[in-house]
Image 1: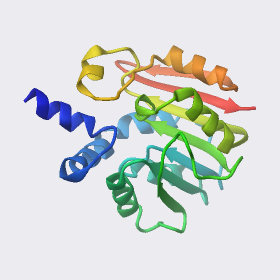
Image 2: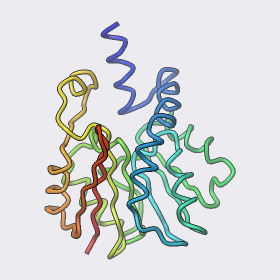
Image 3: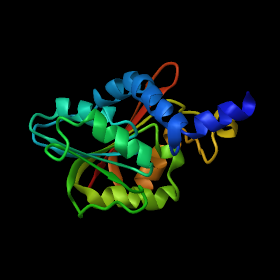
Length: 204
């Protein structure tokens, strides 16, 4: 059972195959309360161009469009299964207002200063070279653009890090410091018991 659980939850990082498809459905459902709560802290405007990094099953992309009338939402994920699921979930708006690509946070395939908002929901734990990824986020954000990180395991937890391969858990304070080092300003940390956290920063 221990090996099964480890394999199942490691699919959080890179969903693959049948088990990955199950995990994507699980994430779309279970991440909803955190995502809705976190997005409530973003000062949205109509017509925004937005990016969700680690878009998983694509549910956050649908939520972003609801918050920004006439906006467009881009999603990127390293998992082929995630890209397929996100495209299916957003099929009505695909290639019109929703655009989904396969790729990494470390090398975002987008032009400089393209986005008004970048989000990362339950995914930053798996980013390789976090400082380098944050520089990429800054690069693709417009001046004054917002970066919103949402996490559900805000404090170091050896159970999760031992269970999920390749996972690094950061506290909200650590993420705030990382954002500050990357040049973000007006950084705010929001918490909701027992374990929700949202960290928002603005690009100069």
